[in-house]
Length: 419
Image (cartoon, rainbow, N blue to C red; front, side):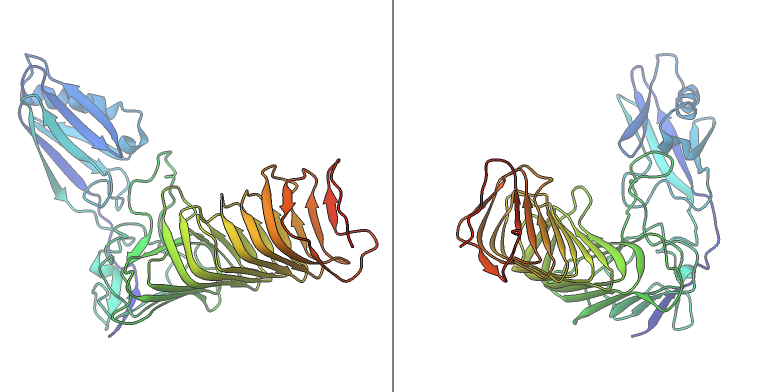
C-alpha cells in the first residue's frame, strides 16, 4: 500500500489523428462523427482519393458544429489530418463519442492516431502521479491524495475505474477542478467522461474525505464509484460543489458545511443504503434517479432537497430547510423540529408527521392532493400552511400545547375542528 499524489507533471502536446482514404466510388460516403454529429462528403464519379479528401476537408472546415471547431483540419493528397486546436485537449480515443472516421458505398478510410494527447490534466498519464517517489498510476490498496495542485483533472477520468483504493482524500489546497461540466463552454453537451471514477475498496471499506485543511478548494468536483459489494463512507467537510455517484453495499454520506448532490442529473441512477447526515450549514440534493433502501436522512442545521424515486425509512430535520419534490411516494416517518421549514412540492403522502418548536410545513406552492395519516404538532409554535386545501388527514391530529390562533392555515371553504 502506498500514497499516490496527483502532481500534474506531464507536458502538453496536441493530439493528431489522420484519416487515410484508400478507395472512392460514385456515391461513396466519407464521414467524420463527433458526439453524434456528422459531416459527410458524398463522392462523385470523377473523384480520386485526393479530390475526395479535399472536398471532405472543405465541409469540415466550414462546419458550424462546435465539436468540429475544436479541431484544425488540413489535408495532403489522400490523407485528412485533424489536430487539436488547444494542445492537451483530447478529441478522439478517449471514452465517449470522440472523433471517428468511417466510409460507405465503396469508400474506404483508415483512422490512425499519429500523435497522442498529452496533458497535465490527464488522469491516465503516469507522469501526473507520484507514487512511492516515482511517476506511476495509483494501484489497488493505495491512498489517493489530491492536494497542493491548481491544475484541473479533466481527461481520461475513467483511467482508475478498475482501481480499488483504500482511501481518497481531497484537501482544500487542491484548487484545480475534478471532473467536467456537463455543458462544454463551447456550447455542446460534454461527451467525455465527466466523473473521476474508481472501484470500491480493496477488500474492505472505502473512505472518501473531501475538504480537509484550509484553502478554497475546487469550484467543481465529481466522483463515481462502482463496486456494489463494498462499504463506502463519504465525508464532505468543505466544498463549493460536489456531485457523487456512489455504488456500494453500504454507503454512509456525511455532509458538513458543503454543497453536495447525488444523482441530480438526467439519466443518473444510484442506490443509497445505511444513512445520510447533513449538518453545519451543509446542503444536500438527492435526485429523482436515486433509490433509498432502509436509509435514515438526518439534517441538523442544514438543507435537504429530496426528489428520490423511493422514500427513506425516516427523515429527521432539526433547524433544517427541507424541500420534498419526489413523486408518488409515502414517507413513513417525517419529523421536523426546532425552527425547521418544510416545503412540500410533491404528491407524496406521509404516514407519521411530527412538527415541533417553531416549525412550518408549507403546501402552498403545490396543488396536488396528499394524505397524512397520523400527525403530531406543537400547536403554539408550529404551522401547517395549506391555502389550496390539498391535505387530507386520515386521523385526528395530536395537538401538543394550547394555541390561541390555531396552527392550520387553510383556503376558503375548509375548516378545522380542535377538541
